[in-house]
Image (tube, rainbow, N blue to C red; front, side, top):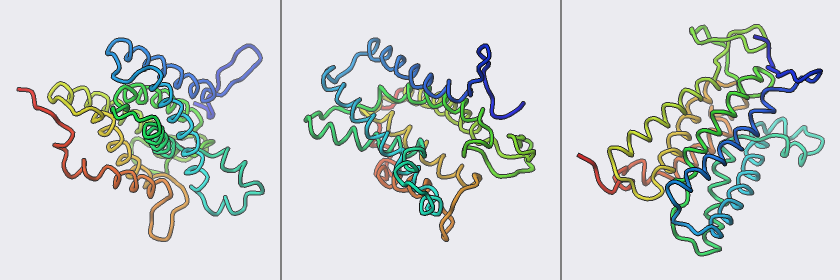
Length: 252
């Protein structure tokens, strides 16, 4: 296997990542529309449109802001900080930025219904597809792990055995999807709880997995993304320490 992985279309070689990232977003959005049509939506279409716009712009800003701050030393040396911020992005910043954008828009339009549950499974699907593309980049995108002697170690393009953290994340997301389904079979959840459980689980996973990724860390041993994850977990602390707030009833 040679990284980065490409797809040949005639004389053209296209990065697999360049195909799968937008494809994941497209399939995820189509899946959202399918779920919305099948299960219904408590939020009116006009209101939902504004919420989606808030999510898109919030995610765009959040992903670039956190991505740009991920390596303060590189940012300080960047000849054009604006371009540096635009060309660096991270999923964690996108999720939390999207959350902020949604909550801001909902406050502006007076929408009080929880809006995240319908997005949860489509987001997981889109992320899985996108992470397959990230894996295809090997060491040529900063989504690889540190060197390891574990049996999971892979040569991602530099001849060293490294943790394939994108594959770990794909497995984690698949397990999380199955777990959410099982939770919803056992419990009737409060509106919005599915999304909250997803966010808590994903933020905790990213907090932990970043310990085996090579990146800039501050003197106290944490990276920018890990600090952002901690901030997100603090935001959800009430549900982490009292998960009964997520549940209406338990099924027999």
